[in-house]
Length: 156
Image (cartoon, rainbow, N blue to C red; front, top):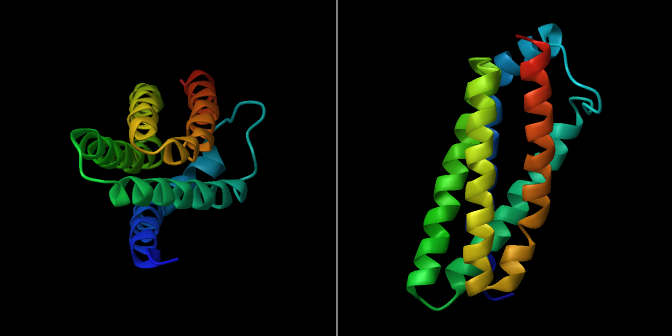
């Protein structure tokens, strides 16, 4: 693959954001697991880093495909949406785990969900495969919204 450095950059960028978020919220996550009532269907804690590792890799692959596409206004919009949703993703963990502001985190997560959908729609116009690679991310964030809403209801 002649573009492996481009793919490596984008995957490492996405994974780095996820890793930094996980590192910054490690104490909040520990407190969350020890003190917060969780809704039905909550997976074991070990599932989250595995799933997020896969999702961040898919995000990076998708972003690399968009980056490698010919320059266009749609490509530029796609990359902007990628960075905005990545920032929202990063900050959600801090709001949810460190601040334990579960209601605000739910609203933030709904905004993230919309940003992911907009990113998928933008990606689709540039590279349909890049868009399809984001579907598991949207589905996981949908499930995360259920979990976040349940935590908020159970811990008010």
